[in-house]
Image (spheres, rainbow, N blue to C red):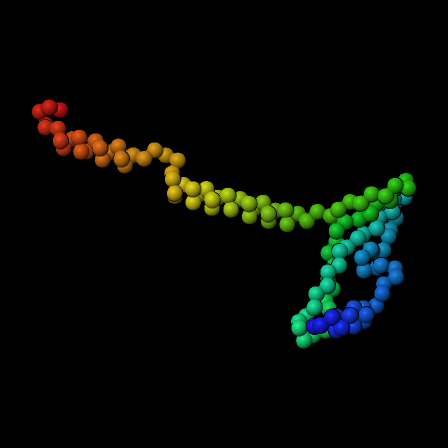
Length: 128
């Protein structure tokens, strides 16, 4: 897709004067608070030959208007946070395993035992 085709595709997207794709329908709660949901739009072309653009929306939070003061409350994706925690745990376990294989935290007993056996063979039975 060259620049000219890209501009034609962008021009085919209808302008949205009320921004209903990014901001949802505002609604009012019982105590008079107005809540306006907000989303993040992403567009992606289907391929080099295709001039279609696919849009997807992801909720990012809500605007809360109460007593004339506006506040943005971001949405939290608990699944993403949990997945990151699991991945951090797996990576740290893998790194700890690699570190233990390279140099274990326990003392090297093999060297001490081999010295003791050599000493045992060298010493006559009566001298022990």
